[in-house]
Figure 1 (cartoon, helix red, strand yellow):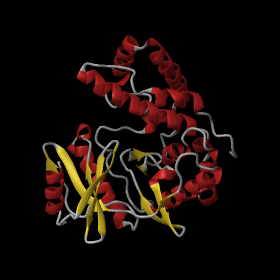
Figure 2: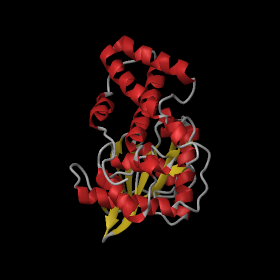
Figure 3: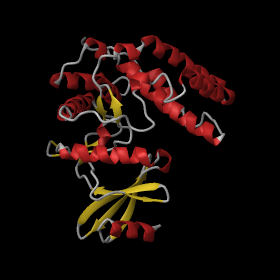
Figure 4: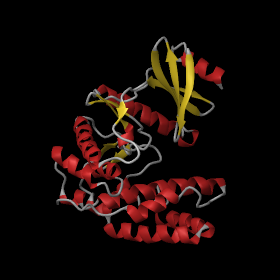
Length: 301
């Protein structure tokens, strides 16, 4: 693997002095050091598919062109055995927060998100990310409608009826919100999808890095605020409102949009496991926990 990584770096025009594994989540990252400079080599998750990976890469290019501090590719990506690789700059700075984040930090996060949205105002929304749907439409899977949803939930119930029951109860409450109708006339834009304190890098009060666009897609802006709020951090909304007003419909929908994102992820997981012939409830603890923590926005309307 070390030889392959070194050859990949050379293919991008960098002669590495050292390569060190950073982390693996949706994608895998390595730090590449050469001559005192640092880069990051990324392998996109193969399960995402080439089209989805290239959509994100193109988005990074467009955001960098707007002057935003994102990890845009330094050279055209390379596809090897179905996996997409790219080399990008190392974005220095300290994270806005990690672990237990204070309300003050979440309020700052809201202000930073409003600035991010303002920077995107001149960028037309691209086509939807391949294989994705809006959080507004999260009560249904990407394809197949109600029939496919019933099939997926039935497969989950056959494995763990209690987990399926809890999701079905939350799903009924979400559908009663009728978010597609509420947001039918709202403009769509690119949302970052995980605007969290640990994904922002700062130096001397200046934003030096905005990381992790693995969940970016096209949606309403309130979906991005809902992601940053993470179900209950109202300070995010207060910070956003310091910079940009939000409508009553948006303020009243944050909990529903957050749950829409949880269900959009659930459908993708179930689709993948059903295709593999092994539907299980393993790994769904986080989503289940959100059902208990998520609540409506309690601030000003």
